[in-house]
View 1 (tube, helix red, strand yellow):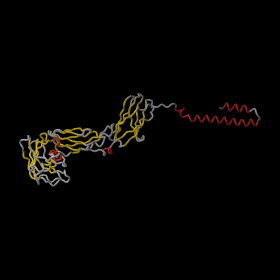
View 2 (cartoon, helix red, strand yellow):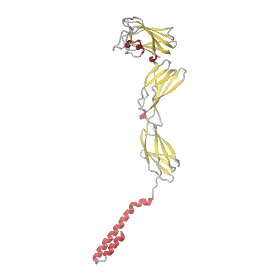
View 3 (tube, one colour):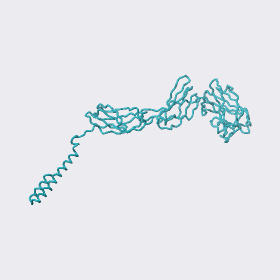
Length: 384
């Protein structure tokens, strides 16, 4: 640029003196302007020229997280063998911790404790053996705590029955939380041993063999698939003072009479449903009205429950006023378990204590007094 301007000035100097002076000033202006432009261009690039080329260290390849209870695990994956250390930053760079890599490949794990329950943004910067640092690798991870604990609760037991093998059968409700992993059930068996069963979230029926007492359970949750910590509910003691015998295993052996139609069948007295009925033969039967039930095996029980029928809506008062109850091991020799009064004017369950000297298989219910010759009853139930 300088040479070009100078040649222009030289050519114009061949004119008159005044014109020479003007042209000289004009040429000098362009010379100064050219030098200033070069100076500004050098100022723009000088920092980079002074520093030379900047070299970045290799970043981590990827990061996975293990969510925890007020803590988190970071797994750093590196394929480079040039990294000496990785520094993990969080809380907008306010906190950090180093992970020694020592120029190795592989997966490097670090657990950070004492964190508040929230989602965190982590930035990982590596440093190589020459002190070069990488660009940050950013990733997000979750930390759980008391807030999550307050959202979980024990899985619901929808019902319990005792079967013909004297086992306790627990029926579980559908899990309401997809994080539910399993329930831990403990009890004391008849040999005095403490038994623990693990019930998965996909299991809906659990059998407790040789059950005796002290049934309790809690439920275990895993907040997400990567979690390194599990969360536990408090243990709940289950009331097992009155466990229903499974009437689905019962059969009718013999009976006095029944009226026509399924709605009057003697089978209805062992379906567990007060809204059905056993109706004796109308116009062709009279007291006593009786039924023999096979319990399916030798079982223990302590409570008899009798309900009048609500088949017609309000409640049928044609039930018995008094009945006897007998038990047997073989349907041949019978043992008298008592004579009991029954209030046929209430729909409430009416319970009676039965003392057994040994397990029995058969029971006989006999209605001996009532307001009419025929007879109507809702349900018979037995409890351990």
